[in-house]
Image (cartoon, rainbow, N blue to C red; front, side, top):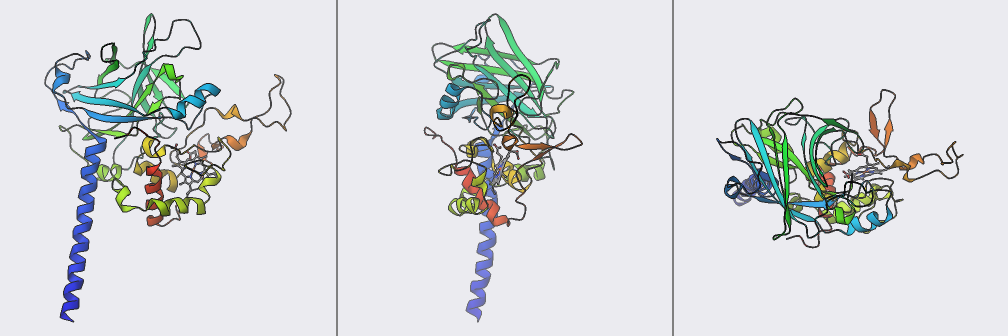
Length: 397
Ligand code: HEC
């Protein structure tokens, strides 16, 4: 009796310790992989990539995955882009009292500068995005430049001959960009022929009329276009949300626990079971992923590398509440209803089966994906654990 009790107590304490350990390990992993520690400086922030400051700021690798959810009307690009390797970028962040500067450098053996007048040569480019609103209780936006409920501010630099192609946008997802003109924003992008790499530095005020980054943990997303690989518009390589730690500002523990949810999912969840659950719940009837290719192409986002582009809390949100973050597929006219009558221009009507959302009478959008909020927490964890394994990074270390 005594012995059994002892064993039971031991069991409980061991369980509690294991739980505490796994939570801490999760946060530790989150810091290691997802958090960019920004350096505070008293001086002006340089936009020159060669400035001394950048030598003293620690960098972190950020991996960018080809975006394939939304595709172009371009057969060649659609063949090349999904086979692209992931892009490894090195990112550094510095800030002072008023401004923040983000330094990003990546290898590119074929610098592509878009000629001033042409339509079929594409530019190299880079962009960063910040959610206009973030923090406790606010879902992260769709990483591919926001969604209608979660707009983002995007800063873009492209290499176009004869002009400084620098733009800022408010974006609510594919195809809904509004150009803005925020004061005191600057971007410099230079190619180093010797090292065969691009470096860009983005500088903006911490607080603009659209977003306030004065917070302990600031989400940031990165996109890179490789012109030689036919990348343009929505077709680019994308990071998942990363988080800048600004040490001068208080860390909101609740927000930290939201964004770091599932960071140990590869150890806590069972991906094999997750894969089975996805088949049982009919996810493969709409989505293509892994060896599950029976869904009609374009019916729903292709999840082949979702584990690289999305992090765990976003995946959980996508499954439990698809209406919160709705991806508008820009290229809906890719599928025509050939049984329908042609319009005055001779075009068939759109085949609505391939539109991912429904426009409600009040103008808001709803996802065509049903919510899977009835699934027990354990099933969701296993599905997320499986989705996280879907990355086609052959050269990932
Ligand atoms: C009826 C078709 C349908 C089914 C069934 C379905 N989905 Fe979806 N799913 C969609 C559509 C359409 C979207 C894009 C619109 C949106 O954002 O919700 C989407 C979006 C997603 C996303 C976000 C993708 C991205 O690129 O960011 C994930 C993750 C996802 N689904 C996972 C699942 C899982 C897991 C299941 C099964 C439990 C499932 N889906 C079942 C249609 C479906």
